[in-house]
Length: 233
Ligand SMILES: C[S@@+](CC[C@H](N)C(=O)[O-])C[C@H]1O[C@@H](n2cnc3c(N)ncnc32)[C@H](O)[C@@H]1O
Image (tube, rainbow, N blue to C red; front, side, top):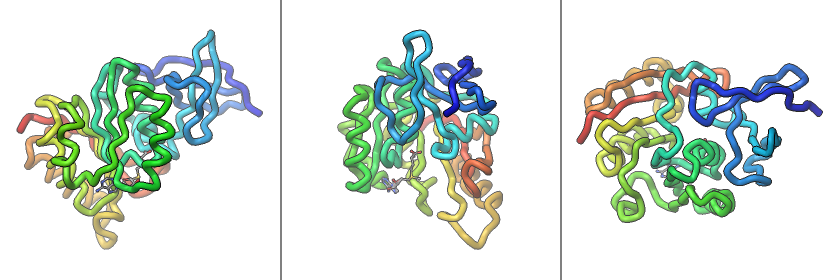
């Protein structure tokens, strides 16, 4: 069993690096819900503070950070609308990062998966699960305030259109979008890089400045994370 030997800050607020005695290095976040592991990740205490290992093979945001994300718009106090929350793996780390000063509204349309997400949110007062289809933001309009960051990971062929539509409802002018693109969900016949370019162009045509496109291999094959800034409605 490996033991934690060192914990250090990264360039990003509330994102840490932990080193184990077997030489492995992982990302981690401070656990907002001490004692609770969300997806079987390791928990460890250092000077009275509990940290959670952040597995980049299970979380595209973790993968993007390890693959050279230049800027993380998710910090303490950030309000995030998260489309495709699933059972809460990445949302739980986002909840750790924004702390109690921030909020994470997690939209997920699969009732089975939402049941698991509800268990995660039970111990996290800043995490708000919403059972809804992200194609219809008008149904959750009254539940969600304007947000600083729109995080999108729904693996749908029309994901970019859905993201842009949600931005019009909820994303503040000057806010950021992080969108994970799964090339094979969009077109299996095209090269992933061609698909990333197509989706990035749609964002540019809809008032986004694209800051960075990060290919997530080996953490997620044929996926990319796009970081973009919204110039307004
Ligand atoms: C790749 S998984 C998300 C994983 C999650 N973001 C994480 O890192 O922990 C994609 C999720 O999006 C959900 N989804 C797909 N289309 C959706 C839609 N139109 N509205 C809401 N959720 C959707 C799926 O049910 C699935 O749980």
